[in-house]
Length: 149
Image 1 (cartoon, helix red, strand yellow):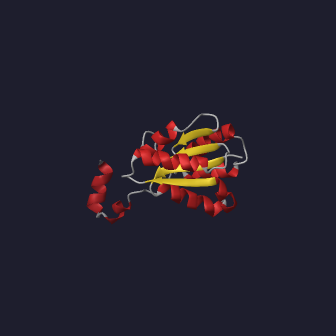
Image 2 (cartoon, helix red, strand yellow):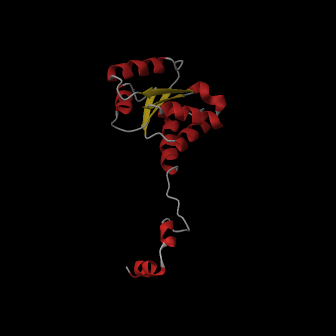
Image 3 (cartoon, helix red, strand yellow):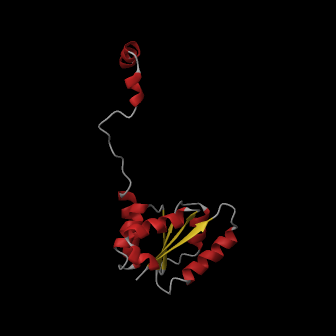
């Protein structure tokens, strides 16, 4: 039964864990958060992440980070062994909720669910109404000129 360790810029990791509590409070014992402060030395981040991994009770761990190439992701990448600890970057709420829905699956399956949940949760929503409501306040002459452009 894998655990999740969210590593992100302050306060995102803790905020995502709090969001997880809205829907999956019974699974919070398997979700940890590590916020990385902007001025925190990389060595300290790595030490805290090692402690966080050690505190996951020997279970497989899926590390979730916010931005590829940033400190949380770079440090997590160094501690990922590809077998018992895997890494997915670009964490978002749809990804997290999908993972929590399937947290009893093997680690490999969770990696696929994380990527699918993260990407499928991002979409453009079309609007039926014009987005620029300021056009309604134009006088008749200005409105007419606008439509000719």
